[in-house]
Length: 368
Image: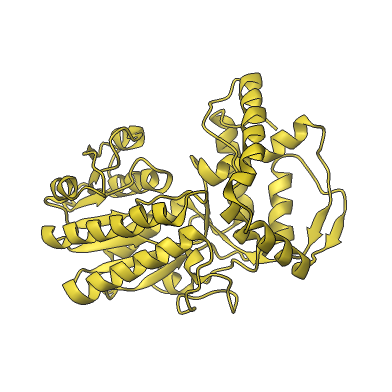
């Protein structure tokens, strides 16, 4: 990959580099001319980092000795590394997302890192009091993952206050784009599973909750943008979301059309009933979804074999995912845009179609 500005000499450490967002961050920083050191757990997939020409040093953020080694000489630190699995218990998420962040911050202070970018989540706001939700909204996280990220933000605040670490925070909404596996495993595969059973048209709600998404490429571009700005005070947080706030009806219409499907008819959105239903589902024992997930995996594996697909996706429904069907999830992006940042993918409708095409071109999905 040819850097656009090879004169930049800063060393940027990106942890979680073998992950979805981490891989895109590595590509964007190397393409922007920075020296990049990529780290993740030993055995992680470093193929994207290798292709980008990044230096690769495996390390576990829970092991301080390994962190000290990988942090040497680093100017900027980008910290997306986290346990992102809505099926994990809170204590496991705390171990990685909270204790791991504490380790990373301590190592950054000791190494004299000049700037750090921490990845949180829009989920820290919980069920919003107002929409679009701004960065000043109170934090009332509901699901375990968001609760762990809220705890991690408090760790960040401690290092900003007590150690003078210069940290900026990102709170992304739901992310989409090429190479997503975890949440994408369900959303991308579900229409094809339905088609296998001859289901191509079904009722669709009218209106519904308001939401917006963010493209993974815009997340990576925003990371370079904010770190290059020299006038952003330490501790500042930014929502990451596109400018297109849509209803659930509009979202699912785009979603279905991209697979050549259409609604049979539309029904009014029963907001109170839906909230009660998904609240009840969120209290199910985690293991109660195991039979469904085994069935989804079996049926998807059959489709992968039938269409000779790359076995990259694995559909899975987690109990905490039901939270995202309650209330609005529309986040204001005006704070970031006011600094001069411009979205490459401002329209979900266009970006989603391009994303589905990528999955099909790379044989992660069957053709429509």
